[in-house]
Structure formats: C-alpha cells, structure tokens
Length: 454
Image 1 (cartoon, rainbow, N blue to C red):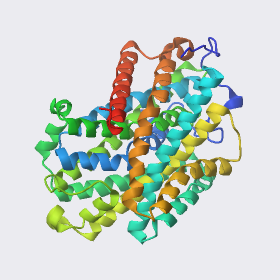
Image 2: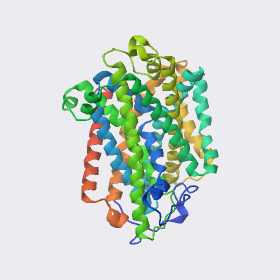
Image 3: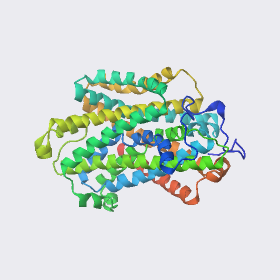
C-alpha cells in the first residue's frame, strides 16, 4: 500500500468539509490549563466505547471454555491479547487526532478505487459479523430473562439501534456515560460470581505466566487462537480513529495535539485494562466453576443452566446467578450495539462518502446484520444452540478481516509525511509489525483449523 500525503507539511490542519462523525466531531470541550486529573476526566469516555468491543458476547464462550478445559493456563493469552490491543488502539487514537481523519477515510484516499471498494466490502462484512454476536447475545438474553421467543427478541434488537438517534440528541458524553454504566454492570456481575466461586489466587497468578504447553497442546493452542481472534476486532480500529476526534482540538497547535494524544492514550489503556479484567473474570469463572466437571458449555443457554445446577457448580448454584449472567449478557449486547452502529457509520461514510439520514443509515446497517440471524432463527425454529453456530462463523470471518484494518493502520501511523513528528517511534513501529504478523499468522492458522486443512 503506497501512502502519498495529501496534506503537505501542515499535517495538523483538518479538512472541515469532511469530518468523521460530523455530528459529534469536536463536540466535547476540554480544559486548557487544568491539572492532570481534570484533563484526564475530560478525555475519559472514548476508551470505554472501544473497550466494549473487547468484551462483547463473542468473547464469552471462548474465555469461559478456556477456563473450563484448561483451568487458569490461558490467562496468559488473555494478557498478551490485551497488550496488543492497547498498542493498536493507542495508534488509532493518534491517527485520528493528528490527521483529523479516520482510518476508513485515509484508506480510501491512499488506495486505488478498486482496492478501496474491496476494503469497504470487507469492512462492512466485518461490521455484520460483529453485529451477529451482539444480536444473538441480546436475543438470547431477552429469552432467558423475559421468556421472549428468540425470533421476537432478534426483531427487538433491530429496533434498539434507533435508540442511538435519541442518545445523539443528548450529546456524546451521555452516550459514553450510558455505555460506561452497562460495562459497570458486566464487571460487577462477574466479579460477584467469581468471588462466590472462590478461585485459587495462586493458580490465577501462575496462569498469567506464558507456558510452552500452549504451543505443544493442539486443543489448547486452538482455543488460544479463538481467544485472540475474539478479542481484537477490526471495527474497533475504525471506531477508535474517529471518536478520538470528539474532543475539541486546534490542530495548528503542536502542544494541544501532543496533549490530546497523551490523554486519549491513557483513557484507552485504562478502559482496555477493564476489558482485560472482564475477560480474565470470564476465564477464571470457567476454571473455578466448571474445570473437571465435564460440562457442556458451548452455548449461552448451557452456561445459564449450569450456574443454577448444584451438580455442576456446587452449593453456590442458584437461579440468581443464572439471572445475573443473563443481565450481563444483555448489557454486553446493548453496549456493543451502540459502538457497532457508530462503526458502521464511520465505514460507510469513510470508504464511499455516502451521506444519508442517520436513521436510515443505522437501520440499513442493522437490517443487513439481522437478516442472516433471523433466517437461521426461522430455519431452526428458534433453536438457540443451532443459531449460536453463527457465532463461530462470525469469529472466523473477523479473523479474515483483521489484516485489512491492521496493516493500513501500521503503515499510516509509521509514515512521517502523514504523521509528522508523531509518527511511530522505531520501537512502536517494530512492535506493531511483529504483533500484526503474529495476529495474521495465528488467525490464518485458526481459519485453516476451522475448515479442516490443518
């Protein structure tokens, strides 16, 4: 991919005619001469929207199954995946802040028309794949909580995306606060359930130390790849490069740009640390409650039922634990819906510069994602286990789509003509390329495993 800077030497001047997420771009004021904590508070928010993509329903099954099958060993995989995510998301925030454009816009500008269309199609399919996990998770949660038929629950998730239109009228900070509340529910539920499960603290600490057994044990390696593939999502890279621009910024002032990069990176790392905690809690819960029980935990309904079964989880089993699990699942699906919808807008406007009413844009994106889930639900007469097989397919496609977002990101943020003095330092650039190669290699291996070639 060849990068030609269209901005010349003044790389910090934004093209005001083509802002990313124009209705919220630069809408949040930040203090000029405030102290560290007040400034950090002003920049806190975009990171939590990014973090929900790293703890969406697509992650749950792989993380819990990892603990159930291999106890605490795969905690090291969760840790490494989270560190890679922090690196990549810091780069996306920097890209948006410095250039005033998102990853989709820059990719379109610096590729040929044919390549741009191909990358747009891949990105749109990745959004649909991400939405599938959110739709399935929310639909099943509604059935578990309120006994709503799964097909009806899926249709409800089509309408809930329009809620974002109302939230947009209230301001972007309100959206950040709502998502933060949903994430807090997820953290509290799983922290409570893990506390009741009485895990081994020594086992947890040891689990964060990488083991060569992961590479030699075929089943362990395959599940590790599933955790990695479910953790780092393409749509988060596009989203991060856009919502980092929601803070008001004068790009002609080098000091303001540097401050925005610093505090956006801190916000991103804090929130991704919370995502790391959630994914760790999921795996720890699987290890503490289900390791050695030979339980079938391949689906959300299996987990819901197991938490209320004393023969599986022991004396702590109760309907309340099951209901809390369903509440967390619904919270995860709804928070991911908000961020997935924003990502869909970024990709549509960035790649093909398609402008349409927000309600139409968001409804079209969601309907495209709902269609395959609804078709499966009707074909299998609302059978949750059959429908959840779509989750596996969606994660495999996300693995295919990831390089199409990661590689341009590393190229753009390493280019001095585009980024000026804020281009990646050598250690960041080489770390990013190593992480990219590892991700592409592992995801390629997982795909080959999934189709039975290896």
